[in-house]
Image (cartoon, rainbow, N blue to C red):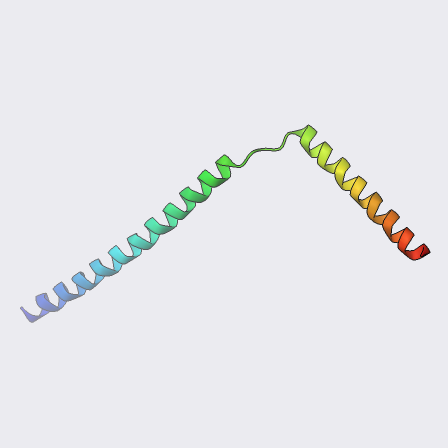
Length: 74
């Protein structure tokens, strides 16, 4: 009888641990689902947008270089 009571206590502890683990897993799943929705709602850049951004970057680099040259000449 005492063995059964000990086993019952162990099973109850195991149940508590399993429930706690399940809650953690549910939280992870929820966080991943939220992140997925965030990624889904992020707009995708078109090729022409990427080309325009590359052109802007090149212009900014040229302007930065020109400013450095002007500063050096001063």
